[in-house]
Amino acid sequence: MAEVRELRDVYGRRYRVGETDRELLGRPRAWITGLAAAAMLAAGVQQYGFGAIVPSLSRTPGWTFGGIALSLAVWAVCQAGAAFPVAWLRDRGLLPARVAMAAGAVLCAAGLVTLGHATSLSAVFLGYSVLGGLGTGLVYATCVGAVLAWFPDGTGPRAGLVSGAFAFGSVPFVVLAAALPAARQTLLDVTAAVVLVVIGGCAALLRYPPRHWWPGTPEPRAWALDPAHNRRPAVRHYRPAELFRCGTTLSLYLVVVLAAAVLLFDLAYLATFTAARSGPGLAAAALALLAAATGSGRVLIGRFADRLGRHRILRFALLAGGVAQFVLFYSGDHRHAVGLLLGVALAGLGNGCCYTLLVGLVREYFGEESAAQNFGILYSAKAVGAVVGIGLATLVVTEQGFVAAGVLSLAAAVLSGRLTQPGRPKSLLPVA
Image (cartoon, rainbow, N blue to C red):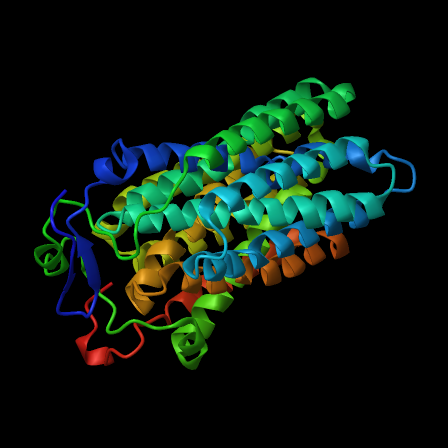
């Protein structure tokens, strides 16, 4: 093993060099991408697959759509709220990745089993919303953090792949839930077992590199000066306590709130809305397409964000997500199946892709030193968005809700135009 050294570049970033991924892992670091993606495939079922069983849950005596949708909101609050504490504990050595993933595996499985066996909404809130939400948050934060740690030289494509897997994993579940509506309990039990095995297996193998680790190639200081990889490097490194002293933080936080509100509104309401007008088959197709489009969009954006500019892509994505809601409104009102599916695909490619961009924007705006913790703080905006979006789904139970969601997404697109790098004079900002 070569001598381990720490280098600094002109931006103040630190690099630990001298250890290769094979020396640390015994295999290439691409292995970590595969493990993180597999775990996210399993964990995402609780979010993107939930809408597929809402019509079935609504038939349970005494269970209302509002109460069921509220359980998804509480789940999202717990899932998003876990991101920062998990990163904070991990950075201090108090929550190893394997422990976090193993706990997440058990809690995710418990959430799914609860959805299959609960006889009261209070049990759903405890088992699915709280335990399942915290479990998914543990897995999500650990997997995103692993990508940030192992791929400092190319986070975007890996973050897109891992984030996209979170959406892709629910597609088979949605299809099976539509094909076997009377077997909800069995389907959820089998899914819980698969989730437990997959995430538990990944927990046994996933690990993090030493802090500030850098691969053998490229040379870090040359990489730092390469505009192809560092189009807009952060002016300095912001600690979590410094984040909310920046005006950019509030603007970005609100953008995430609005984007999350629209996506979670669609997840909560789309299946019920479509099933009531066009039947359960189209409802299942719409949900599966929403998950597939979201996953595909995240992978594509992860590959091209560095080249095209995250700020620019974010604005176009939010604009597309807003237009999608008006397409859904028109198509639902006129029972136009093709238009509905077109709107769903556009919604997935739009609002569903913001989280992948958030990973890169956090590094670009606030630096590398506390990237995982800063991401966790901004990702917590999803919790606020869940309250807004699912509140909208329960209060406006007509196609008019899509109009309101469209306005929220367009407002986020306008607000995203105010985003600038903290500490950099506007006259020195490059064109987005």
